[in-house]
Length: 200
Ligand SMILES: Cc1cc2nc3c(=O)[nH]c(=O)nc-3n(C[C@H](O)[C@H](O)[C@H](O)COP(=O)(O)O)c2cc1C
Image 1 (cartoon, protein in one colour):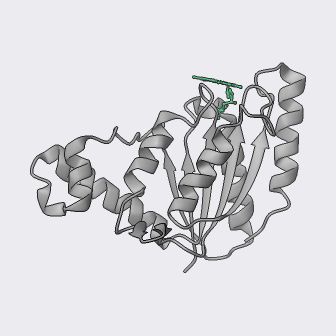
Image 2 (cartoon, helix red, strand yellow):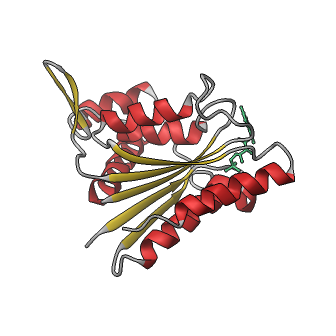
């Protein structure tokens, strides 16, 4: 059975543009993919804790998890990685907060980027272990940074997903969300138009 994993990272609840667009995209993709399983995580509702040293040590050596906190962190990492491994398609709703991805999304990345599980080291550098997946990344931003040196999110997400082997990535941008209602409408519409062109 095919599986679509959706991660929403916006903190603005029902006003979160990246979440609204990620929901629309997931709905559009699922409408064409009968029987496709949908796993959805809203990181603002169920945040991933910041990674700490003991949990990180347990990632490499699960027997090293001695405290309840480290055991829970290890179990969470196992669950998040299992969700990702099962998935054929990843939909990521990522706002721009203070020029970058939200810290909640960074925590998710910290829990799924795990040596021996989602990537491994080789003589020529790290090799991603999650090959053959397709990712859709929706970036909502207050200003318009696409194609400028201030767009730090696109290369960062490309690098982090690439590290674990996900290189087939479609980026969808909703720009100008904080530049007045007209600009927000235009940015949203452009993103909607792009979304409607995709299917599984
Ligand atoms: C905490 C916070 C920080 C923000 N920082 C930026 C920023 O650095 N640059 C920018 O263009 N817009 C910034 N914005 C505006 C958001 O990018 C915009 O509201 C976008 O719609 C966020 O996605 P969301 O609606 O899914 O939350 C920020 C918004 C918030 C709430």
